[in-house]
Each structure stands twice: as structure tokens, then as C-alpha cells.
Amino acid sequence: MCGRDGLFYRNFSRRGFLARSAAAAALALPAHLAGLLAPAAAGTVIKATHGSGFCNMGIFLAKEREVTKADGVELDFVVTPSNTEITTMFGAGLVDMSMIPYSNFMTLYDAGAPVRIVAGGGVEGCIIVARDGIASAADLKGKTFGTFQADTLEVLPYDYLKKAGLGFRDVEIKYLDTSPELAQAFLAGALDAICHIEPYASQCVRGRKGAHVLSDGTDVYGKGYSDCVLAVRTPLLKSNPAAVKAVIKALFVAQAQAEADKGAALKDTVGKYYKTSMEAAVDASSKQPIVVDQRNQTRFILARGTSMQELGYVRKAPDEGAFDWSLLEAVIAENKPLYDGLKLKSA
Image (cartoon, rainbow, N blue to C red; front, side, top):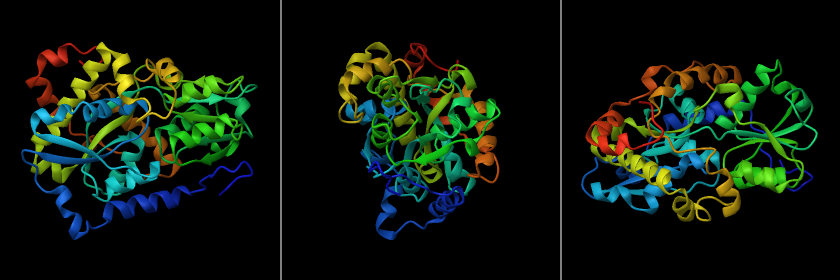
């Protein structure tokens, strides 16, 4: 729906989103695309989708710096027109893996898609930004609130309001399609508050007079909470675990590189992957670090299944069968010096 401000808002129902996730999970792979999931070998091309926040920086660096090529694997990013298509393409089997919010993963897992979480992407960085005059959850009552559907950026405000005894019934939710679009809507004054990812949240704070952070998620979840994860389709896990291990190893290398030289990491990603200024990116760079080893976030992610149930996106919360940490653990065992040198990890 196009608002008076000229921006396009999505008024999807949660039932409709669930139906689309189920359809994606059940979609038969067209014959001419069957090769995408063929057993991998030397020179394997892994097709992947990704999001747009700093939680994706690891996979962006792995791609830009061709880290996986040392192990005979090439990452091929499939560009999607909106956040919804990231989930749809992965669920339909049009890509092999996805750096995806854990909440979107849940919709596919609940619908029966053959997908598993095998590693982490980034932690924290889900941020509620509000205009001047909104200082608490209570001040959000009756206000317009922008986010993405079934995203961690919807789960956080839901949990934030719930903690204050409020709910989505107390605000006017507006669903948008892309990270730049959500930021633009807030900066243009079309929304009173948003939940956004870094570096866009910092861009919004810097770009609108009086704007400020209402919650960075740690007041609701504590430090180090998960945002996005690396999920892989089980046919690839079974046919070529070595290719998946190559990507996980590349993420560890990217994390080590970013921790050692954040400036170089930003130089390689801002502009191409992050549609924001370098100034805003530098300001945001410490707020959503890469963390590949998120085994200690298993319980946190499972607990969010309750919120996804209450929001109507899943029929039941996921179980531990949604995770397969075995390849991550194998990579750690085979690359101890690399792992031991990381600043952020489970162990």
C-alpha cells in the first residue's frame, strides 16, 4: 500500500506469510535448476542469499576476499528484490545456503523445509530507534512502527513491548521491504519508530534530529544475543559436507580479519553491500560484531520460538533438531590456532 508520503508499505497478514513459507518449503525444484543442489566437488559453486546488516559482514568478506577458493569452493550471491524473497528462495531450494535471521529460518523449519542452522553470523545490533518525544515503550502507544515481517527486527519490538505489558495491538505496525527503504521512511518522518539493523540504525539516529536509541536489545535479551545464522539445505549437508565446512572456515577467517582490522573490512563492504555512509558505518561497527561460533545461543534462539508462535508465524517452536553444529565443531578442531585467536566465541 502506498502511503501519502509516497513510500510503499506491506500490509501482509501473518497467516499469509505462513502460507508463503509453507509453499516455499514444499515447492518442487524445477528440472533446469536441479543442478544447484548437485553434489559439490572441487571448483564447487555454492549459491547463497544474504541480508543487509552487519551480521552478514562475515559472508561478505568471505566473498569479496575469495576466502573459500583456497578450499575449492566459490560463493555465488543471488540478489533478491526484498527481504521476503531471501526466505522464499532458500525455502524453495533455489539456493544452497542463506545468512538469514533465525526467525525467518523458523518459518521454513516449521513448514518442513529441509534446512539446518550450521553456524552463526552476527550478534546484537537489532535496535529500536524512535523520534523525539518517545522515551519509553508506553510512549509508543498509537504510534507508527516500521519493521520487516517475521524478522528478528519484528521479534525484538514484540518482546520489548511485551516486557512492558504492551503488544502490537498498541502500535500501528508498518511492514517494509528493504533496509534502505525502512531507513528512508524513518528519516523522511513517515514513521515514529523503527526496529533496524546496523549500520542503518546508526544512520537513522544521526540523520533525523532528535532521533535516539530506545532499545539495543540487550535490555531485553542480555549481551551477545543472536541475530542471524548460517543455514544450509540438508541435501548439500549430506552430499558434500566438505563444501559447507569450507564456507564455515571462511567465516572464521573473515571474523578474525574484521577483529584485527575493522577499517579494512568496512572499506571492502560499505557502498557495495551497505548503502550508508562510511561515517555511519564506523559509528555502528562495534554494535553488531561477527560471531561464527554461536553454540551458546542455541537456547536463546529456541526460546524465541515462543514469540514466533504468539505472533502466528509458526505452529510450534523449533527443537534442537533445527541445529547441526557438527561441521562447525569439525572446523574448530581442524583450525585450532584460528579459533583460539578469535575474540568472540562460545568457548
